[in-house]
Image (cartoon, rainbow, N blue to C red; front, side):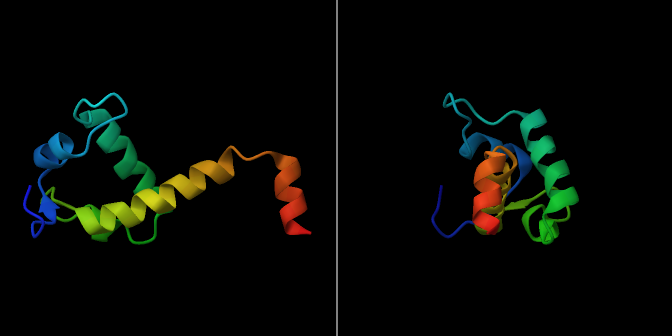
Length: 85
């Protein structure tokens, strides 16, 4: 992939962005992430562009946001309480 190319179609993106096991990302995973972004990520339209393209730079920002939210959701409640103090 060219370092100057930062917008990919769904198919190209799934081929480039591998899952945990090294296989291409599945369609269902991509649609789950898009659905989650629509509900939680304020700038999801910058990630999932009109016409089915995906902006890689914005996806990386979204991925960071997603990871932080997943961490917070699975964090120990006692630790959350201590951080609030």
